[in-house]
Length: 132
Image (cartoon, rainbow, N blue to C red; front, side):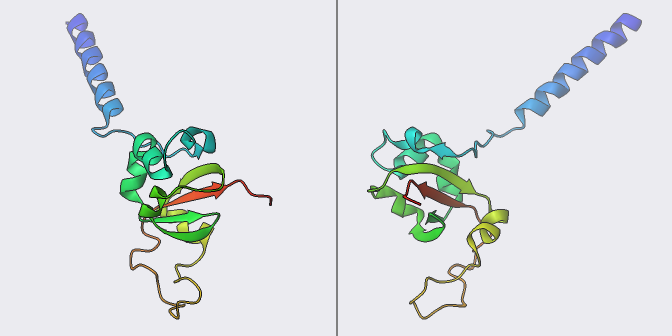
């Protein structure tokens, strides 16, 4: 009887461990990418679709050196400057790290959000090598 209970306990423990590790979803990799990791790709969008596909699905906006650059589609363009790193800034960090969600200066719409979802979604941040 004792042997049967131990065997059942081992089977149950292994089953629960398997459930905990699978989680039912593919884990996300939100670690930053180095410029070297994306340098062999035609553009940043292609690199992200290959190396961090969830970033492209989750983010709507791109910032370059802390400045709003535009929608994720801008990553299809080629960059003339060397990239230091690319990171995904989580939604909880967007406003703290990049400032309030305002329309760009000179548009006549300062003081209004650029997007009603602003600060509720992560953004892709490209950090360039610069002389600074």
